[in-house]
Length: 105
Image 1 (spheres, rainbow, N blue to C red):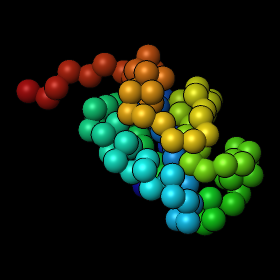
Image 2: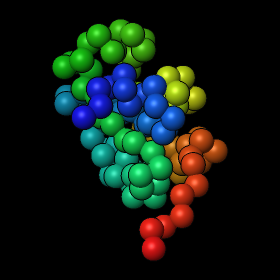
Image 3: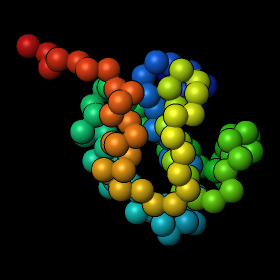
Image 4: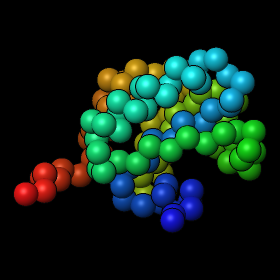
């Protein structure tokens, strides 16, 4: 199993949802992220990171509000947003970084 760093440094884009259990708007992101994952399949990874359980990463990425979404590829931040995002908004920023894969025969 890859570590958090292993995921974000890979060439597969990773959508990370920095959230907190006590955050109302964070709960709204669950269905959105599920839909994003359904649409991109294995061409991207979707992770949730609880800021209270992982304060090191919260500090490292200067998370000041939750939810905060960050898309990483090859260790670089390619998009960042604080607040609730829509499926379409996330896909818009993710699509140009996705590898095209043909369905298995």
